[in-house]
Image (cartoon, rainbow, N blue to C red; front, side, top):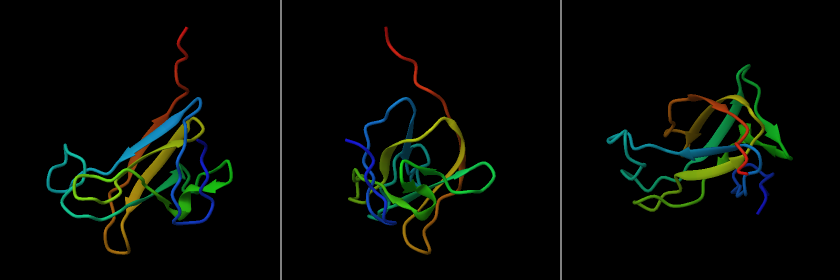
Length: 114
């Protein structure tokens, strides 16, 4: 599959190419576990280090892309996205009052197997 979401709020599913960003929203009550305290479904936002939203293959990651597989409580909390290599600020939200902290990530090109 390829990334297909262009409209904000729609889901993006992807088969990652050379580089891949994997996102899992962590639980605020148990930071080492996936989110399952509530059934909130999250949207991920990805920004360049200068604050500009990542736009890649027609997808504006600054507008919020829906995460897909459900967590233990039923909310959508994880996803994988084909993105170019770089340094990004990643954060997620579930409505106007539920927001994650931002996380700085570096995405590198995957090593190819021989």
